Image (cartoon, rainbow, N blue to C red; front, side, top):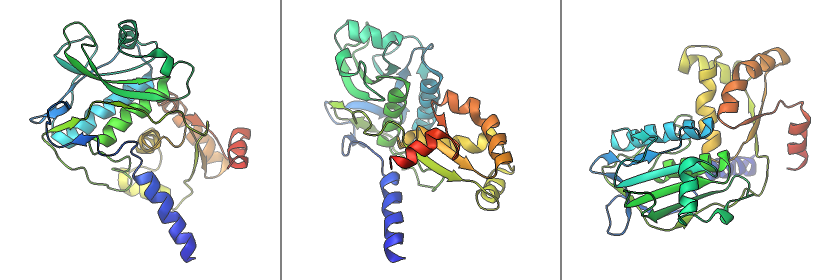
Amino acid sequence: MKNYFILLLSLFSFNLFAIDHNNIVSNELKPGNFPLIENGVPGKILIDENDDSAVKIAVANLQKDFERVSGRQAEMMFTSQGNRLIIIGSLGSRYIKMLIKNGKINEKELKNKNEKYIMTVVSNPLPGVHEALVIVGSDRRGTVYGTYELSEQIGVSPWYDWADVPVIKHQNLSIKPGKYTAGEPAVKYRGIFLNDEAPCLTTWVYNTYGTKYGDHRFMPEFLSFCSVYVPTTFGLQCGAGVSMRMMIKTAKPQTKWALLWGHPTTSLWREIIRNG
């Protein structure tokens, strides 16, 4: 029993601290660093309005994460305005194509890669822009993972909701210049099994959100899943009737978040189990 407890604690600790790169963000505006938050004002975020819905959701959450840290929500824009910007996008999106064309991003490092992101500081990325922190993904999930990596770097844990991990407030944050990536995932489908049978999780949902079921109950789960890069697929089991009801209710949000659905009886889920 003791060994089992230690194993569970180790697994929880691994997911709790899912940050890819340590010691690259400072709570001071150091010379040469790229400012993320300056005197309580977060950097402006530039994205392509036609990028994937999952990218837009991730950026919207990043805006809120900046607010959790600084007290002020980061501004998101679709047209380039400002001397310094945070540019986020997938290969093929408008501003990333411009950066590739101008030789600021090497497309070969991401083309035909699976769920890979690169986060790097670029000088003179666009006309009128002196400097930018660029987060580019090989595909939509790569971009999402890079975006949530920045959320973690500024101090917002993936478990801020589920585990009540506190967010430390900062008025200034800056990131060291460099090229940061986690590479491609070693496993294509990373699954998590969520058992929401009553009265366990359903009771918690009722006491926390005041309702038994609804799309909103899965949003913190989706955010946690995307942030720790673990499940592009997850399964629910709570009896056939409830499972099907949840599948119907949450299928559309999952698609928007770039998550895949797997019920414990599906061939995809069985394949995940067989491959560990």
